[in-house]
Image 1 (spheres, rainbow, N blue to C red):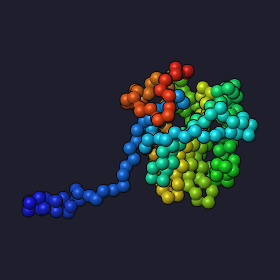
Image 2: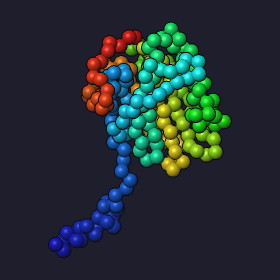
Image 3: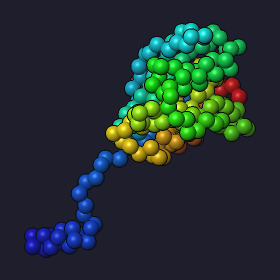
Image 4: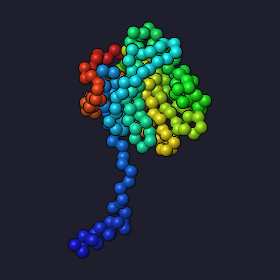
Length: 212
């Protein structure tokens, strides 16, 4: 017993035994075949049916949000179905970008735009999907938002990270980790994710052929 006490004391002095720190987020891939995407989340994402509408292109046929919140950072994938308006995909994407930065209900109007550039998922040889990536500081010090936008196979994808003031680490690499993990080609998800990701509860499981 005396030897055990001495051993523990020595470890404490040397710093090898430390008090527990904050829990680390358990990042893992999750898949939703019915909405044609997979991505890394820091926790199990919850699916919610939402309403999505825009002034010009009106209501989406349906919309779902997949959300996980860890350490005062909100990770969300929004998928809005405009499959009945595929020829207007470019216009739908542009209106979504405008609404994100200018509409009152997004809370980002009058925010400071820090970045607005092209985003890409998959290399060209695998059927690249191009979109936009916008980083904005909310007005009045209410946090930072990073969102990527894509329109593919009739669906609008808005993948966003909201870093709340309670977290305050606006340079956190987890935002980029989230948005850059997106997979559209689910036929390759086992290879890309190094194993078949679990299906998000509420999603269908039938993988549709990838259109490059």
